[in-house]
Image: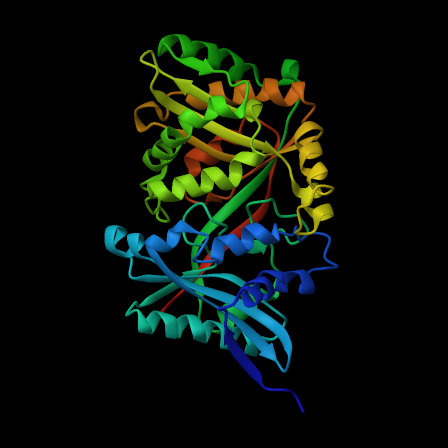
Length: 377
């Protein structure tokens, strides 16, 4: 006789650790799942560590069969999204389950109950608290590894969601781009880059260390908002969240991989952030950072043939004016210098065709698709 399914609300530090560690058990033999850093995952969901709770409420749940954890899920409401964007929505995230639809049913019922308590009528996920958290259920590309800032899941997750009345709301696409030698790179990009720099009297900033970057980070976030505020998933990022993300990710940033462009008055009008791929390092670390494991992260920064394209922001006044040619030209030089020949893009909304056009001059393949799923109550 099967043991009964039960739910436990995550409250103690022991619960938080069990919640974060659960996917390690179901994906331990999966070569495509890249484990997150346990400490950072706990800090993200812990109200005592993440300032997002200044404008959010959340509850996290573990599903048990007997004494064994068989699933997890988080329910969140971002009150900025509700009050300023006008979306009457609860988010769900950190959704992982064994291959049993009854477990998913129990988990999602907790999210629906959470929505009813907060008098909200729509549910969407998987996603985090804000635009800068991981989002989107993998629906294609199950034999591709996830990056440090994307999710991985088994194919049956989608089957569970659709069986329980959830349907696709937003879709994202991801590309893998091949980087050729600079001499063989698109001549059009090289010529256009020089032309645009001269036409608009633009200047490229060079950073020697992380401290050189820090004064521009707030401007980058402001520019990010101006770039993407018309997209359906956009929610304004608060200043205290910027400080949190700055602290969280600065250790992974290398100054060579940050490109900033300013106008004749030294105002930031465009930027891009790429990073060497941390995928292999994170597989070796398996969730834990110590003095020995930190070596893998440092080595990934120094010696790597892969990179990840994380963020790009362009002021609306300069969009569709060829600014991306400058960014790509500079990244091309960097990648060739560091012998990087493969770059992965961050997930891009399927309707964001302006971003996807950036890859048309390069050999590329669409290798992953992901989606958020929604249900009205």
